[in-house]
Length: 105
Image (cartoon, rainbow, N blue to C red):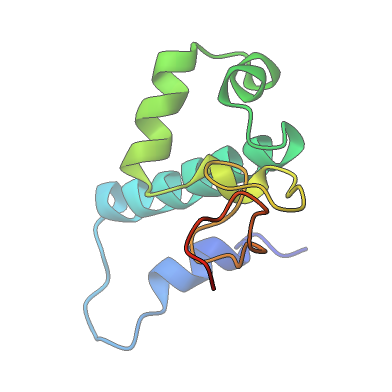
């Protein structure tokens, strides 16, 4: 029976000689858990933060705080629609030229 999950082993086996305190190790594990959980629930909700908060059983404001704190972007979980600009397309995604493009090229 493995009593040490991989995430805990990663916290306790850094390349340095110093072992973190219990509180430091716990804080690192909690931060990793929160980031992974928020990302997973956003994926389940297709990037819809209100729905993700309901699935997680938490207030939407609290989920927004955790999303910002962990540098997550709900837009990466939104279904991509052809030709969509803005929130539904991930940053840097190529968008086909619009028929409304007035540049003349």
